[in-house]
Length: 178
Image (spheres, rainbow, N blue to C red):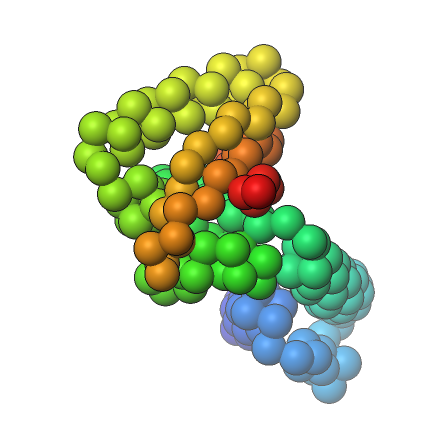
């Protein structure tokens, strides 16, 4: 029983290391067991190493995607199902002047770019309706044109479209100011 508990603790330690991406998983080869426990340890060791490798590949893939989004020539904003803004690219900052820290939610962003409360209510209600319909129908959000206020007070004409998944809104904005 002690041997089984020791093996389970090792597996738990492995799982924690892999889940947190804490480098290479510890070496299980130093532990010796008999019979079925040795085969189980070997199988678990192989599984954890594969998971660690897949985790590293996934992290690299996420970094590549972030880099691509960052380099896109149009403003991009990603928000989650709770309306938290989880990403804006450099072009978004260049066009609007706001950092992600300054606009942590869609409500914060809307309050800044649509300072008139009545216009903000109208724009956001229409935007919600369009995004919800597009999500239900599995189609892109058709671009709509808005007058948006930058951080420095300049008003820009922007078209906003994008895509919606279950957990993410992807807004693509285009500054079409003449």
